[in-house]
Amino acid sequence: MKNKISGKIVALLLTLIIVATSGMPLYAKETGDKANSFRYENGQPIIESIPFADVFSSAWKKVAGKYRSSNGSVIRDAVAKGIDVSHNQGVIDWKRVKADGVDFAIIRCGFGMNQINQDDTQWFNNVKGCEQNNIPYGVYLYSYADTIAKAKSEAAHVLRLVKGHRLSYPIYYDLEDNYILNHTTAKQRQKIAETFTSIIKKAGYSVGIFAPKSWFEKELPIAAFNKWDKWVAHWNTKCTYQGNYQMWQATNKGNISGIIGPVDINFLMLPKTNINLKLSSKKKVQVSWNQKSKGIKIQIFYSTKKNKGYKKAATINSSKGKATVKKLKSKKKYYFKVRCSKTVKGHTYYSAYSKIKSIKIK
Image (cartoon, rainbow, N blue to C red; front, side, top):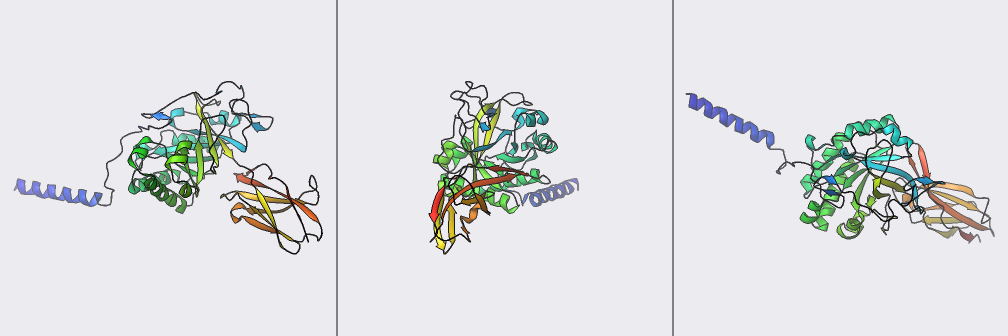
C-alpha cells in the first residue's frame, strides 16, 4: 500500500514539474559573469594604457568650452561627457560625480539572460543616485546571446529592471564578448540584435548597440546595424570609426570624483551636417541634409548677407531629410546654414553649423 502511494506521489510530482517547466526555454541557466572581451578577462576589467594617456592634465575634461582628449586636442563634435558604470565601480557618490562635470551616465543593469542572480549588484543604487541628483541616464546589458531564444530572455531581463524608471538615453545592447564571436556568424549576430532591439523598441524605449570599433568594422553587418544608434568603443585620442555613431567610449582610465578607481569616459557626439540647396518653385528653396538620426532636429537659418543677419526659418526632425523655405524675394541671393540639436532632459545640445551655401532666387 505504501509503495502504491509513494508511486502516485512521485508520478504527481513529475507531472507538476513537466507542467511548470513546459513554457521555459530549453537551455541551461547561465552561471556567472565571466566576460571575456577587449576590456574584460574572466569578468575582471582590463586596465590598459593608451597613447598620451597621462600627458595632458585636463584629459577628457572641458577646457575653454571644448572637451579635450588625452593629448590636449579638441574632441570634435563632442557635446556632452558621460560615464558608464557597473558593480566594478562599487558604491558611487553621485553628488560628487555630477559636480565633476559629468552630464550623463550609462548604467549596467545586468548580464545575460533573465535571471535575478545576473542583475548587476549596484544597479538599483546607481539608478537611485542618478535620479536623486538629476543626472540623465541610459542602460546597457552585457550580452552572451548566441541564439534568438537567449536574445529574447536578455530583452526580458532589461525590461524587468527598467520598469518604473524614466530613461533619458537609450537601452544599449552590449555586443563584445568573445563567446558570441566564436559561436555565431555575422548574419546570426544580426538576427540576435534584431530580436533584442525589436522587443525593447516595442516596449517604448530607444535602443542602440554598443561594440568595439573593430566589431562595427568587421563583425557586425554594416548596413543592418546602421538602423540603430551606435555607441563605439575606441580607446584613443580620437575616434577613427568612419560610420555614423552617436556615442564614443574614449578611455577606460577616466578619473572622476566620487568614484574609487578608473572609470570609462564617453562623449555624446553631435556632428555637423552637410546641406544642399535647390529652387523648388518661384520664391521657394528646398534645403536638404544628410544627418537623419532619431531624436535629432535640424535648425535652418538664412540671410541675404553671408556673415550676418541670419534668421531661423524652421526647426524640423532630421529624419525628414529636407524642408522648404518659402516667401523669399525675387532676384535676391540667399545664404543658408543649418545645425543639429538634441534635447536630453530639458537641456539642448547643438552641433557646429554646416558650411554656408548660397542660391539666387529667379
